[in-house]
Length: 365
Image (cartoon, rainbow, N blue to C red):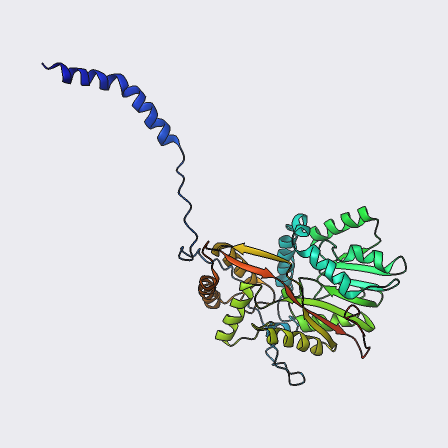
């Protein structure tokens, strides 16, 4: 028998335990799939749609002074036809959604936006402010230092989590402010026992249902010459809004906002006039921040928009799937080489006044 085969067999037996241990270690490691490169060609996640009662809206067209601004038809009339349980479910969902963001809300661009609002409204000692959808009090709390002890500030929000943070901050600042938990689109009777000089609604109005009836109700709290200041997203700062507008055009459904600067500005004019207010100013804000995101994050934002109270497609599965298709196509057009979409976040700001009081400066607008 040759010596070489014998040595080979002995060597194999001598290293066999080490081979077995190495194999065991390799097999015990969790499998880690490599992260796929950013691409819009990834499979779309399944679309989960929870059955809900049908959403009804007033389908009467809106005409005002010949204006043709786009207005969401679901925002024109009240929602008395929807069940009280549906409204409670919506309010509870919004409470949870915004309450979970309360701790981090001030870290976003909202603080910068609140600073701008305080400059725009230019409060004076003794004036009263009503801050709708006040969040964590970014406008309400510093506003108290402007109106002084003779002025009143009231903040209203549907989220208990947001209000808890606002009350904590107000206590630290020793600011005497009333924070109320309520639906700003349907305030309880006599919830505001006095008239106010200014009403603000920062980065929230587009989320509200029934915008025109809501604005009419708000204006009832204004003194003659009182002002309402609010904002809507711009045509280039939110891909989600672009997709919603394209879907509305395809399905011949009107939305509150359009896709061009003229449509958006006209929508704000139309909105104020429909609520019995005089449009005073419509102007662009500064750019507050720039964000980048991938397709899955964008689709999550789109689902949130489709589920919003003002969405006419909350229960329309065909429209929702079509929205996903449009979104993927629009995302591809805007996607950079890194597979992300980049957006500058800024807003159109509108100011409406009650009555024919004239203001000589933008600050007073």
